[in-house]
Amino acid sequence: MLKLPELGDVTPAAHPSDSAIEMLWRRRSTPADFLSAPGPDAPTLQTILTIAARAPDHRRVTPFRFVIFEGDARARFGEVLEAAFLANDPKAEKHRIDCERKRFTRAPTVVAVISSIDPAHRTPEWEQVLTAGAVCQNLLLAASAHGFAAQWLTEWYAYDDHVISGLGLGDQERVAGFVYLGTARENPKERARPNLKAIISRF
Image (tube, rainbow, N blue to C red; front, side, top):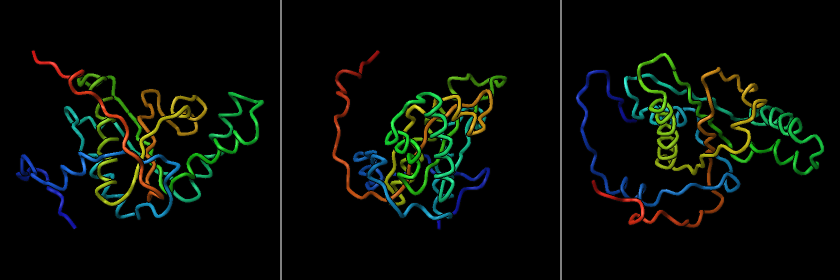
């Protein structure tokens, strides 16, 4: 078990690692539909979230928090999703309703990363929002390093008022992402990547 640095400890500025480079080079989200048990156990999930929280955070605002869905909680939240879906589409067909209700059961663990900005803080709101995005990316990488596949999603329910109410979000909170964690039933195929020539310039 790695020992976490304590406040004031001198830490290395860089961590040369061929294995880390390979992981980053090959990083690929695994669709939630490809995930199954097992997911991370409690100590491993705690470590993954601890690593996720080590994101760049200007002035240490901590403008994010986590909501964990495991076991029966995934099905209970499915009731919130079903109610929200029916509120938007009362005439929806049964198979579509079933699909929406079962979304969180696609993976053994789902972590909602909540962007929780402090508008009164002198750190710009945009920077606080970016921190929550960095947390999501850290979470994906930490999960991969621990041997778990993951996907960062939002989908319609991240923006739905009924769902937001069901999550108990505050006025300054939004869902940065739902991160699905588990074991891949099959490996995903490589996808197209950005053309660096099109997105790199020099001043």
